[in-house]
Length: 98
Image (cartoon, rainbow, N blue to C red):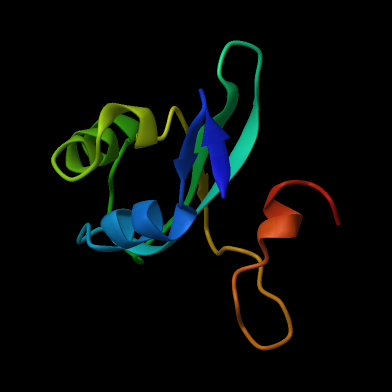
């Protein structure tokens, strides 16, 4: 769970919205420290081979499905997201804790 300005934000909801975008192969959201809001939402994105999308396009997609405080404020693009042994996305590694 990510705590954004006193609101509980569940990463899975944002992940599902991002994964619904046709250019996205896989997505994971994490909370990162923010001086004003406590935490902010960071989206880690791996695009489908040959696909293209930028921050603005993905943010517009999110705006159609999420309330404002759940919107990612930081986007980071990867060729592939790090995985754990059973092929789950390794969010600890994305946070830099491994």
